[in-house]
Image 1 (cartoon, rainbow, N blue to C red):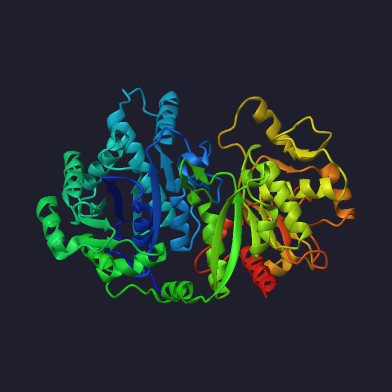
Image 2: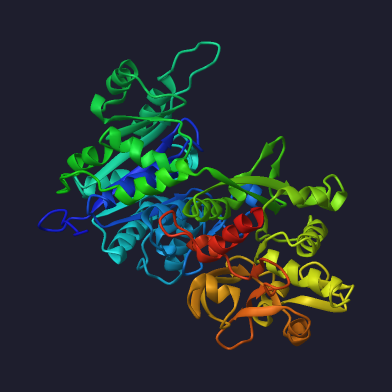
Length: 554
């Protein structure tokens, strides 16, 4: 598709997406969908996420606190919305596309200490907003984008977002006509009233106005489509045109959102607001084919995802493993199958609340990454059961490490096998801390110091891994401190384990598998393949796992 210039002078455009009333109603999906639609019109698009917390990045937060930690290609640990941007845009982003309040303050203070402000009195305003603006422009320049989408986390009424709203105000003033603001707001339908209420959205718009920022377009989220009467009311009280109120009802899949948005011509409206030369409709041909496949699948593939981060009070937090779940879907749809995913707590198997024999009803079992001792023995019991009962198994990061430990305990007879992460005094440390990480752990230097980002690996000729990738050399994203202990590799290989993926210097084991004659599909990977899975290009390892699960089903 040919790239159309925005204007003869190539003026970059910026679209800010902010939230009103409450968080969690779909700003990230809205931002991703807008980005996809503008890209489908031939524009070069990139996307940023701004998170208002003081943490420098998302890496040190418990997943139940903030959902999945998504790792970018350069190793930056970020919010899960960055994963949506990559998946919708079918691209890879870097750390420049993500910032937090903490990271912004850290850079401003560093510059002040380095005398980069040349002795000026450094103030929260304007210097913090100016740093935010500089980062946005840098990301736009590095991507050479026509349009840059910037999502601001949280809601407009939160105290910690004031500085980011100030950055929007300053950019709108500086780049007159080249900055648009989209407000995503929820319209509740109280059951006792039975009527859609616009007042919370009016309040959100006025809160935004009080910061000197006015919405150009409002995405009205609700359980049902927004009618003309409510659109007129929102337009009247929120200072937007009626046609710029976009209805965004609940849908079964987030992948329906771009198609629904385009029914209201959202991309054309944004092109008009920003005076961009992007005439002609959005080309969603391939996207619509993907959506159609997701809905037309008849056969089912039952996958059990066994983790420890699912519970939060009375609720299930599937977002903790968001990229894994989406990767399962993409590979299943590509095989013409509908994934039926069950979220099982490893602690239930550890305590005996669930029977291991229950796993027989699943076509495949996946254990994703994680940290710590909670539920580990339950996971090891599960791995032993699926290995012995020949149920397809896929272990990611911790899931691979625990597979190695299980094999050492129950096949090699090394009963005290463990990982240094849990029992550093174990006589058989099958999984040990990486040498360059030991000093960091001793100094409690934990944030952003793991093996992070993309690293290469070489695959063994004739292995399942090579067959899946169709290549001998791969690059995958990592997030871990521990590795298979080199002292045990030879013994493991002599007893049936195939390390089919290794680092170029052969020191680090990246993929382990069992021969097909022993098990239909038993594989663990040290990296996180889910970060490379895309709707239009499923990940080959996930696809191999799903194929094996479907074959076992037959």
